[in-house]
Length: 570
Image 1 (spheres, rainbow, N blue to C red):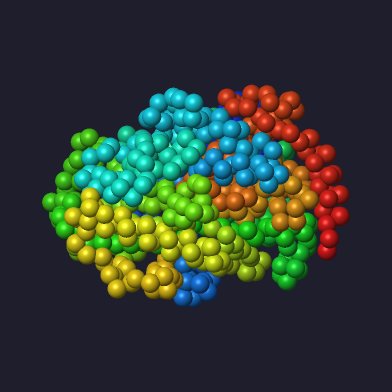
Image 2: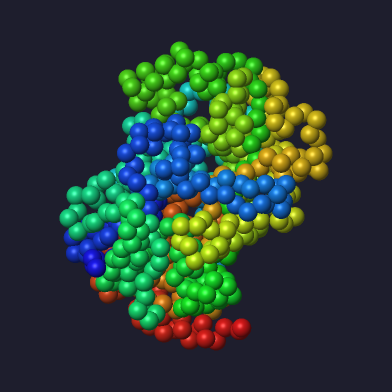
């Protein structure tokens, strides 16, 4: 059996970061397992290629939820990246950190070291921001943050109309307060997608101590007693095993990290016993606490031929887009779908910070990444930022190749329904405001006769869908909280040699897109892992960052976790 110091499961937004940082010194051997193939498919690297990978069976897991009781019992399609870079290779590219309050809340929930001020150095370390170096932005990092140039009159009208509705115009959504409207920053570099595979893994390939296996799907974490010792995986029809001399690092995302934990005997005892899986640790939080942003897409027909619909519905338009990108690496092919965003308070009397995010796109289609409409169109995508609704992910069987059961439970609380209705109302006001109204020929969906709150809610139930931000299914928190799975150093409670490093550890969903926060989590985790490996003091700089441990060494943490788990009420 091959042996490495660290075995990383999943080469996605987090796994690629760890592969780079842990192998950089040359001191530790690292094996990176990715279930999907290489990212050599050309459409992955073109920002507008998002539409080509959305339903691609090779590069996308293509999950479906269970029928959603509050969305007219529809099964919702959940794309997840299945290639080097993971979902950072197929996402909408929007560069958002979230609000300061998100991270301060994480810390307040019993996670020392995860406040905004303590996470900010890692946000700065990861980025190369075209806004330049400042107290809140960084330069010289692997992941590029590129501002979309403000040269689109429909987007400018959206920004002006939003301003008339009380939303300030901003150039940076990521400094903490977040409230505002403006052009987005994207994870692009010179007109190409800057995924974590490009930003982190490509330069790390020259490290001789890094071993990458593609089309290698993990099936189970191996244990000796309560210590993780390796990973079983299938590659090319053959079952294999790899040994971890130090740690197994689970970076498979909010759906497959809990699935692998459950298959390996870590999860709710009742679920594991249902499938005759020996219970290694009874952690009911595994797969629970599932959170996601629900998007409601409002579409309008536009009175002028100034949308991407018009370009894509014309041979000359498509040729012009291609020529522009080939010559200058600019234009629609270089900037993807969503050009501008807004963070606002749809319910200002209830919220001191934004409760709703808008993605504004100069394109419209029946579904995300679908064939564009024959008419000129635009889309306002409305998302409640901090939903109360909670769902769960659970294995259906002991078969690791069977997709897990996914039940988001969207719109299951009164506040979620009320905030979503208010967000739709806000979008309708913006569309009806003078700078924007001149371009709005007619509402396409919902139509003009959707007026009452009940009618708006019925529209949401019929058409709302995910905006692809599942999180929270291996929640970080103190072992005394029975709903948590990992501690503040991302170590799984009650076992040793195993961490979860991805968006599943988020106690609460961040206010915005999840890719950049996941990269930050991995940057921070890399310092923790290296600190533990070196046994250095808390606060010591590791790999360019600052390790902020406030807990003991791993053996002591496992002993304490065992005692706390034993004392939990049954």
